[in-house]
Image (cartoon, rainbow, N blue to C red; front, side, top):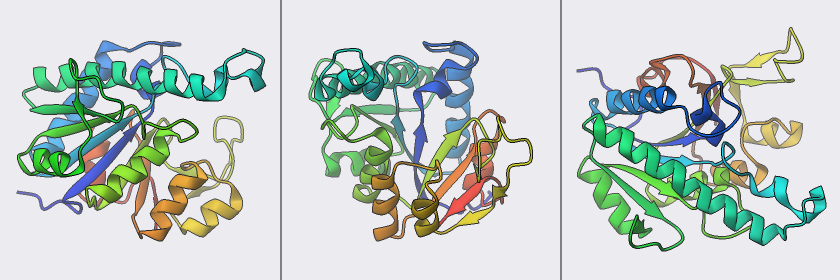
Amino acid sequence: MLKPAYKRIVLKLSGEALQGKNTHGIDPEVLKSISLQIKEIRDLDVDVAVVLGAGNILRGQENTASRGLGLDRSVADYMGMLATVINGLSLQDALEKSGVPTRVMTAIEMQRIAEPYIRRRAIRHLEKGRVVIFVAGTGNPYFTTDTAAALRAMEINADAILKATKVDGVYAADPMKVKNARRFERLKYIDVLKKGLKVMDATAVSLCMDNKLPIVVFNLTHRGNIRRVVSGEKIGTVVK
């Protein structure tokens, strides 16, 4: 059996990753593809935790009074956290249908549909081979799901954060707008912060830097890329 480069990972998925080519919502085919890719790495005995965003449903910061939409920032952020629960439940359903035992753990208690987040219980689920899906962010407004991913990764002693995107790494400029934008293969945390590169938000990057946790940014739309990253293939951009 192939020996993975990472034994325990946190996979960070944006809400937009679930919508596929749609403008919003959840694409069932994309959901199925992601669940099968997660199953591939679980079959390699890699412990997998997932943190989900909710940009496909509602993005808190875009609904605040400062953007002219009238919502208090805290209220908008709580709405965004609840939207991540919808995405988490949909991913859980897809994984269970693929034969992968799964637990959803939420930072905001809602006992009828998910377990409350307890660090020791989350680690126990991982040790038993279950995929753990962390939802509701950190449970606090003003913190993004990027920061939630970094925080949970520290708490469960993950070896790396895998940041799944629609492009094949980190670029000096938006590759959709700048044709010959430079792609980085490796970056230092401090360079990400100084250059304002769109890897994760500054709080998340700082957390990873302080705890020497690698971040791998890669293209999720190419089937099998999660397995390739976990196997140690040089794809995407590594921040360490």
